[in-house]
Length: 592
View 1 (cartoon, helix red, strand yellow):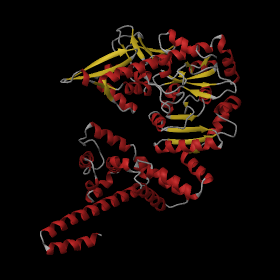
View 2: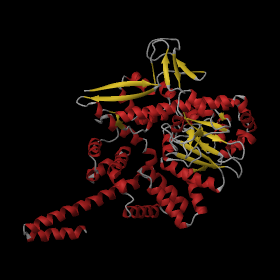
View 3: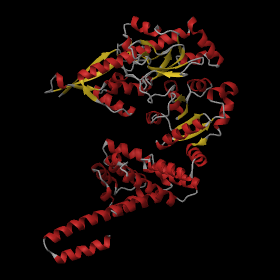
View 4: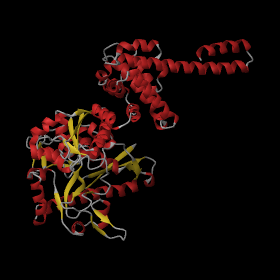
């Protein structure tokens, strides 16, 4: 029997699992960092909007309460604070509490489902450590929220006049300044430090939250001084960090918050909170580099835009985008550094199975300068000339690299694709651009894979390999039932390595087209429908894929035959059965 206790503190929830027979020293809890990560990746407004129609009211949202019958909008959602409250029935809580109650789940199951949707691994930790981590997360959330308010208020005071003039000179509208919650950090070493101290937080709290710095002598001071402040906001609407830009010749030109319990570099995208609704509507995102580029794009109607926060695009950021859209349009500078950044980014995006286009601006231009000087029509005209992601990659490497480097890039790109359907989709396209046949290109990939294996670089993949291979083979079998009979005759089950795959194959192998009579469990239905989504991309090369599976069956069958014959030979030799030894040696000669 497991009892779940919910603990609420400052809009944050922890979950303690008390198991029969365990004392306090052995209790464990869901890692508060996992809870914070779920909240940062999912939007409270988006989740609640699935169940009730929310309407904006200032910086909050309202609707009739989904937890009791009413017609008046007494239910309010505060995305910046991360909680909801009903003035009628007093229902309240955060994202997880809402999802739990609206779906009739216990806390642990609600966390599990939301973690799956957000792509977050749930970690479990010691309860005492959890309390400490939870406290750190809550403190960092509150301090960043307070710092955001502090910077915003300074911007609209006399001290912020210089920053407001700068924004006006860059043609950034007041509406955008407010929407992106821009601020100004005043000159001086202790302004924010003193402000936080008065709010009851220690200087060390500010350091751990990423908004204050500490030198080698232990002196704590404001991290941001005389800088235009760009708050970095999570999908849940909470300020988690800041970017600061100097307005003169100071260095560094840009400075970000240090990492904290709520902010990890490479996880967030600037402007994604403001862009998420438009991205989910259009299934497209414009991805650029600078803060002002993102804001200008929104100002001129391209509200599905966000930025990479001054670092190279990361796998975490690509994963986050893949949950919101189908296509990423890269908007990068046209210089060598910009092209190289676009090349790396496009490679990652294509590898994730997303559509990709690349627009590199004319020398000296960027999204902000083009839009503010020439308008949205000029930008739209330039968008029409954007290159397909793969074409851009191949053209760039063909122009700037040697033939050997080109083939190395192609080999690495194609070998790195874990999804068989993606390989099948890209190989003919790459071969066509390079002037190779598909056979030649496949041979090159095979040699690359073998070279990686010989150097031990595939060690980690060996663990996951059998399951991944089973999924790819069964995806093909789901998409093209006309091949199932041939696969059964060739004994497909022989090469399936996992028990779930063999069970799934036995359920579908004798079926033809319709899925209504499949006796699937929920996980099998999930796999079936996900596999059907791959049908269009596999259709043009299904014959080639079938031959590859056929060859794999043949290779594994031959290997197993050799192993069985060798074992039989050992037994015959032990039994001194010379006639049997002679017969098996003859069979071995035939299979080698």
